[in-house]
Amino acid sequence: MLTIERKTKKVEGRGLARFFELRGREIVEGAGTVWYSVPGRIFMSLPYQFLPDPDAAEVRSLLRRTRGLGVRYPSIRRPGLASGLYVCRNKNYELRSVQNGLRSKIRRGLENCQVRRATVDELLSQGLQLNLDTMSRQGRYDAEFGETAQWTRLVHAIAQCPEITPWGAFVGERLAAYAITCREDGWMHIIHRMSRLEDLELRPNHALDFTLTRQLATDDDLEAICFGLMGLVAGHGLHEYKLGMGYEAIAQNSVLDLHPAIAPLLTSAPLVGGLKSLRRLVPKNQFVERVTTVFEGARLSRQGMAAGQRTEPVELRRSI
Image 1: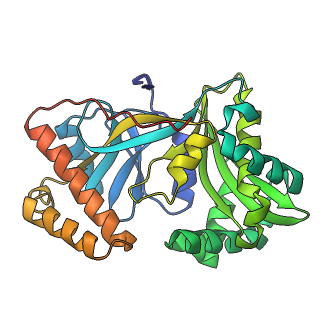
Image 2: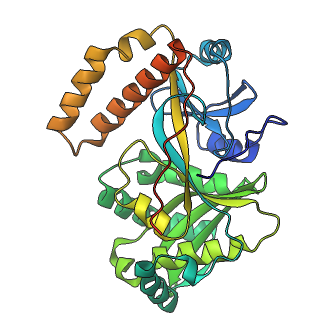
């Protein structure tokens, strides 16, 4: 199992935090960490590879100051939801680093698409359709990527952050897939990726992901490439895809500490049990799945804290 060394020397992730702030997220610092707000008044730690270990008093102070309902952060010590970080450190990354079944798709993508940096104008004029297509396929909706005004704000935020770079896979002049990346603290993060429905058979995602990873892997100034966190909602095959593309899944626990005023109620056995029953009745409802997962994770974290429990994360399977 891979591990990430816990860092304590400085607060990192300020460039990524700035990008989120320009998009309307609340940014706070506390417990030696940068945090950004997500829906539900939960604050997540930055950067994604950093392993904070705040004590209960630090978390309570942060939540009082921000009026937040809880915090979520990765840990290899505290109990929580089984989670992971997708990472590539292979400096010799090439086509044979990829699972056999994906190599022909990559070749097809490279034949059909040109991978290069995307411009702000290209994202503004074409990106919204890719967002809508991707969210429709995944059965979800995020107004930041679906409404013109919010998407425009996000793209303008890219232009104001030197750490952020958009990349695209183009079929002629048509944007078939894009990725938004953040280079900071010796890591390259692929933080958003969307693609156009009508171009999927041309394999733009495979061309984009492979080309980006191959180019970045040889950069001696980069420690690793991160392809994001494991989500709270099932990833529609994304887990197997990322493993197949040659990324490792670093096992972590996702700790969810709720405000002490609401934690006893929201982590109670009757409530969590009722949500699990509801989830079985509506298995395709992502809102119910997300809420159930958050409260279940908070219950695991709260029980572990009360017992003074320390635990190792469950190792995640690698498909290659």
